[in-house]
Length: 156
Image (cartoon, rainbow, N blue to C red; front, top):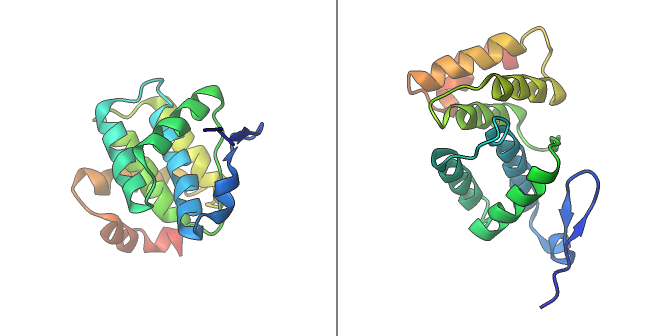
């Protein structure tokens, strides 16, 4: 079998089969890539982080094999993939959950999360409060929708 994957300098793995993927799966791959970058910001992808990635991947019908291939690509070059069609708050919420998956918030992960929030369009003046409030909400067990309600004034 021939591997048709092409590697570009902006960390996209493109296969001929990618042209036939559903828009949902394409968005899922973009989102998963961002989560993977966050998970690997501290240099380690631990079991909790990997399990979280697999759970997200399954929502988008992305195989464990595809997750592993993505990990190899990200190890070569870190670069956020911003897809304006993906709900940016949902991505940041998942990024914060990924950052917290190993029960330790690494300074590099926190910095990357805040950079990502700005790159997706959140004002740099609210990013600290946004990320800190998401961390607090996740810590007390609030889910995505509960957290959105609490942060409505920041994300409207």
